[in-house]
Amino acid sequence: MGQALINADMLSWARERAGLSIAMLAEKLQQPEDKVAAWEAGEARPTFRQAQQFAQQVHAPFGYLFLRQPPEDDLPIPDLRTVGDHAPRGISVDLKDVLRDVLRRQVWYRDYQIAMDESAVAVVGRAKGVMAAAVIVTDMREWLEVPPHPDRGNWEAYFRDLVQRIERLGILVMRSGIVGNNTRRVLSVEEFRGFAIADPVAPVIFINAADVPEARLFTLVHELAHIWLGESGISDGDPANRRRTEKLCNEVAAEFLVPEAEFLPLWQEVEDWKANLAPLAAHFHVSQWVIARRAQELELIAEHDYRRYVVNRLEAYRNREERGGASFDRVVPGRVSKRLAQAVASEAMSGRLLLRDAYRLIGVRPHRLKTFARKELGL
Image 1: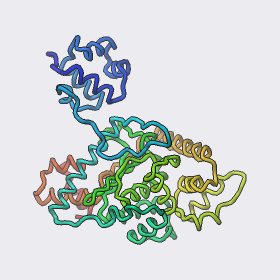
Image 2: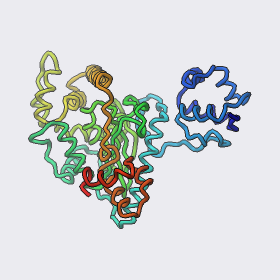
Image 3: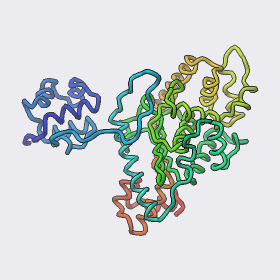
């Protein structure tokens, strides 16, 4: 097979973008390090097949390797994950690819809404300039038509109900723990827990489903607060984050799920603070993780105790996943938003959208679309 006439500089750019050293990449490619180094130095060229494998391992489009210079790789929304005085952390290629994937769907849905002559989503930016978490929480509850907390059901039922209510407002809620359909590219919880796109016509909430399931309820409301403020951003959910927007969104999520005035009288000063978690989680119909988070927010437990608890919960979850196999959410309406899936399926079945384009948007193969639309979407 002939040599690929790639740009050697693009090889180095693509590898560094993926956060790989030459040694790490050589191991993935099953090639000697000096050969990979020679490719990047322009002293030798890979074969066409080797260049394709190179692009695959660095998660870059194959065509990028032939460009004269790297394409612009700026983030499409603000990175709000910086904590305190720490320097901003790098953005992984996985997160960048997920952002691009979500934005591709969001742009299609935005055009669809405009074509359908739909008005802007009323709640986007409603709280712009408001700094009081309690005021935002009251407004959110009124629009969502929910009380301070459910009177029955568990946190999972609460999560599902909130997702449905949020989508009825016109906000797309997407959640996945992997990049596309690639189960080997698992998203990092340490890197981010979610992000929000506060577009006035097609707002989106994305939740990192690689996170502990019981933590996703807090992330959902945190990102909803971003929409209310009209401020897009990537979130790490860290209680130590001192950025104005992140701090306020944390306060909103905590007060929305566990109202302070009701919580404080119920908290017991006991030898092991974790004894509070189960009864209070049952009372507020949230997860024990959310109760621990609220206790830390109110300084009832030390930050290091909370962090140790979170680490233990995440490790336990990952261990269960490894023993039981991956449990990534394969239900399309959950992964890409039921509201989006309904719009795409409706357009495809009417003939206004090509079936292959529908597949690219929601991942349902053409021969299954009608059955999927009937059984899963009620169309």
